[in-house]
Length: 167
Image (tube, rainbow, N blue to C red; front, side):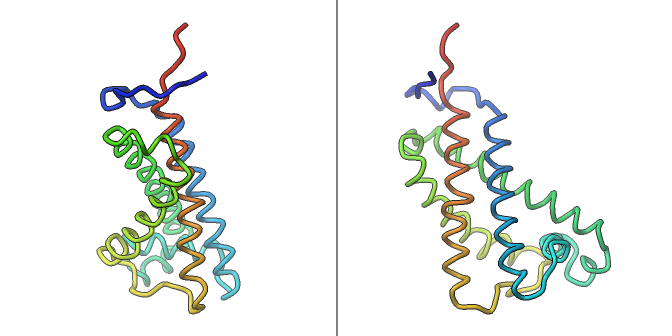
């Protein structure tokens, strides 16, 4: 059984759990986005192109077809995997983050959502205001980031930093 050690700052990360946790967070977030935008008639391809528009702009993303959809897919999973690594880095400095991964993961999801909406997207080439027109969607997006992004990242960090049993 794995246990947590106090000297986490000097432990090596196990990358498998972080890659898996980031991928799970990315998949859950993408399923949510595709489900949400399906009500407005958007296809998964268009969702992925909207993500890819952060690199190339809206017109080039749509004109790029499946190539920019793939760029969006890789970018999306790259970001969510990076989110898992960021949480693990923070947990190395603040081991309490590992003791309550659901609570702190949910808080981290809010921080991650705010960073994406207020920093990453505005600094990208993506068009402004890609939010859905429904008032409830804001709170739903925050909740999804809390529990479908933040919590998997926190659980992944906990697994990545857990001490291995001696053989």
